Image (cartoon, rainbow, N blue to C red):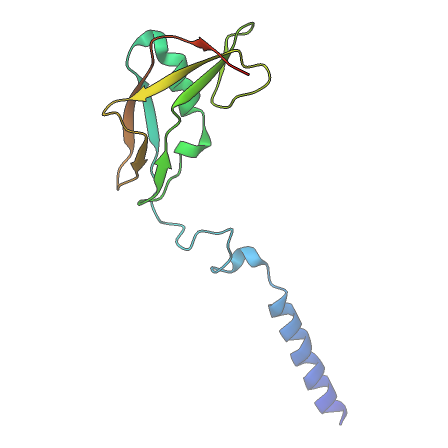
Length: 134
């Protein structure tokens, strides 16, 4: 009887160890990609004119346009905001936003679907910043 109890206790311990295994080693975990070898692609923005390079830099700094899987549809921002005193650009309207302007893209696009290669998009600002209406 003692041998049976020892064998059962060992089996229970093994079961507990395997059921408490690290979820990062599980390929079905939601935080891990199903295929870590799957290629990803990026969208790079290029200013139409050198004076508008800060807009392209702001867009390129966003993680929303990096490590994208093939077939992903990405909406492109069409409005940019600026704070007057610091002249800081932002893609989101904040309390300190004082001016806004439209962002335009080559081909008049507002979204892209990622294919099997990196994408380069020319961008520029509209005619000029306007005062934000609150």
